[in-house]
Length: 136
Image (cartoon, rainbow, N blue to C red; front, side, top):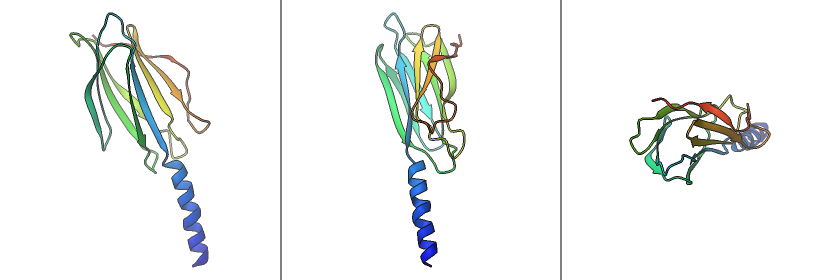
């Protein structure tokens, strides 16, 4: 019984380390005073719809599940007529050892840019680069 309790204690410490926070940040870097409309969702949560003024950002920090399957999908639309849009995976874990980090998205006139921020436990870290074009 003593070994079982030690096992449970060590296992709990490992899981607490893994169920740490991660998140998405979406910034409006559009020109000409355009608003950015956002709506994001996961299996358990819905964020928005929200509008972000130029120069502002939205950040959502959340806990990861222990199976390494946390995922958020987002839709972004450019104002004022919201004809230009993009649907994409805004956050995705790459296994149980991935701790996610902050996925920093920037809406710009020529597309949507991504940078993954965080420590050494992030799978596939990337510097700022253009990830998606706008759909007309």
